[in-house]
Length: 369
Ligand SMILES: [Zn+2]
Image (cartoon, rainbow, N blue to C red):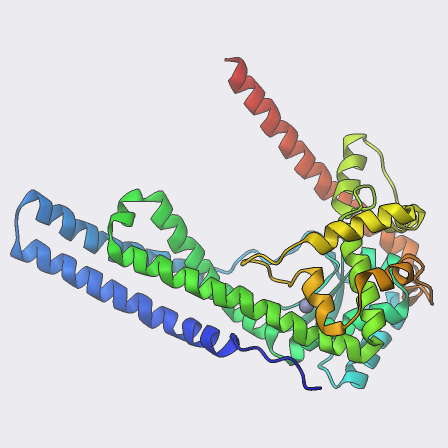
């Protein structure tokens, strides 16, 4: 069976390449029409219309400025360890890359929150990021499947395209914000055209992202087989729906009750394993009820399982009893790394909790007055 194709890629590339010529066209036409109206007519309405058209052009030109700014790139929840700290992880990643004919990353980083992702940084280095949760919960074999999925995003060019797209996205977000802030801009039909372009672009962008996931999953299956790929997918989605083993909930509760844990991910794994069969089934039911939205970057669990030909209920017992060499053994001293990641996670949760509490106090103060 061949690899899944991405029918949205070519239309998306056309929409990306056409975006700046389209904007230049709008600037010239809107500005030109505005100037013409101002020169030809002198009434109040003509001045308002001409001014609106010219101002729109100016706004679009100013809206392009984010292209020349370097966006904030540091992820507070990410850490980069020397390879001596994770010798076996580096070896496993190299092995998966060589077995699957995929591009190895330039750098492997760890993350306190994200399960796993890849990106190209501003120096053009390919970065593979693996989350603490997956390391604590998965055996090495299952983690290798995730790594195959992620590395394929480099080889297929997805990561590079996403880096390029982030430039367009900054401009689009800026123009959208301008159109919303300056309500007068919405009177200009050229602004409607720009917003329509953005809508079509993002429909294509998200649809294309979801197709990329199916292609990446095909490498996942090559690495571990359909049943194991489905098991890990079920496990990751079930975790999202187990309130007391869910990462964000756990962090928030620990902060709320001013508790600290040094082994956050081990605690998460303990809670997951301690959950009853009915709790697993309940979480799986919720995960299977999720639907893909138009702005979802990943297909929902039900759709991802479909090409694997595996029923979620059949792999649930496997997910509940995943065994094998633990991925924590890929590190020279996992407890020290886990302690560091736990501190990061709790520190960020503390900031968010503080901000939310401040917002509640502010609202309460306003209500009292
Ligand atoms: Zn992916």
